[in-house]
Length: 334
Image (cartoon, rainbow, N blue to C red):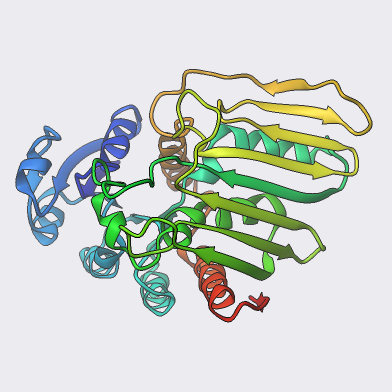
């Protein structure tokens, strides 16, 4: 399959590396407003998406650009008749915009998959398998403590993703959205949220710390505890971005900053390591490669996709509910 990529910024490097390691695809083009960055990928380089789509005729367009570019790029790709589109999260600038392009893709019969890759990280796949297998009995709650340690001072984020400083919504819209989807993957559909958000670094526009309590249909609860100014115990703080606990009637699964998963049976003190630390290539346990490979395999055999846009809309709905909860200081149903 031929793959063309829109975007050649910081995170796009993980996408290009992962595509190059996939034996089932051929990279045919890179498009970026900065032509020098597109040329640095050593692929045919373009500044115009229309031109790239016309000249390369890709099967898959991978959109690796910020949310303000998503809707126009998706509509352009739909008009070009690509086989499938992958779009980076957080997926458009608003829920209404996300719904509009989702409807357009559905009418065109072209799969639109959101590149929400955290659910593809090996530790969450292991935790999901173990919970479904009954390793911790009936799950009652999950907790994740985000501690990126990159948000202090006037130069926060400038070395990697400087637009973070001006985003009016940061912690949840840009980062916490990963755990909205991850908790959905692990526990099912959230039905209500309660959020307390705050801005701690005066150099940025949006919130950078807060707590979000999720309620699920079966009564399970999950807590996202995020603070971008503080760090956690890990050699690579960007591997897991924090630490987690997943607790049930029969035991607890612990996720460390090193990407290990350990199981402790209820009533005992002994920990059994079920996922050891590894030197993962790429970002976050090579989750970019895992997601891309999932899309390619699903296209090849006609299997269902994870995180098609129509399924992912619930994540955007939960995100909106979180901000409404923080503004009103009330529990908000989804």
